[in-house]
Image 1 (spheres, rainbow, N blue to C red):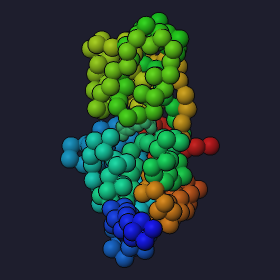
Image 2: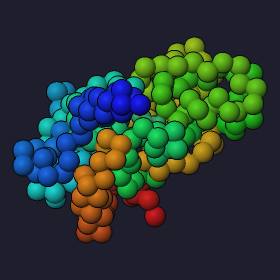
Image 3: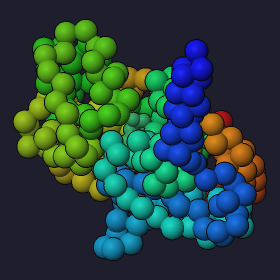
Image 4: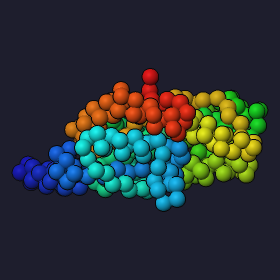
Length: 253
Ligand code: ARG
């Protein structure tokens, strides 16, 4: 019994050492919040030359400023972002993650900074609805809610995974797949940028709320983020950033 207790105590110490999210007070003391994103998901987060930019980059920076903090960005592949929280590599991830039950087991979500959904894109009006995906090959980015959603569509022949959403789009553009499922605003932006590429917008498969994530249980940081975000939505700052990238307000109504 005593040995078991000692073991439990030792394990608790290990856990405390490995998962050591910086509480708000520590971030405030250091003066700088470390933010992480992907940088390959225009117009939400992307590189313009060497400059990381996009809707959620500007929103993230505005929130950090409102919290009285400086910010530093890290960019990594989409699938490494949430795990990096548990490894204490950054304080907050803002990279278009939808709030899902599965993810909420591993991280704490903030309030959403946009509401959107997964949309079917193809090269023909004949592939526009979920039922049209039966017997078809569909491209999605690995680790996304699009992957989960397409897996649930009955009769889909194959779901092809790509490390980035751009790679999934390119697979459709070169007709290696029949359809691509992506964010509705990503699709909208792409059509307006490449009007002659032949992409056709189909139905939305599902809707979702997109938020930032902090290390599981780092509620103090989430609360402070939410307060600042709420103020910036209320005073029109976020709406202005949204208009700049989408010509509409993408915040959740
Ligand atoms: N909204 C989708 C999801 O929650 C896609 C996110 C893709 N984000 C990115 N940075 N590539 O899974």
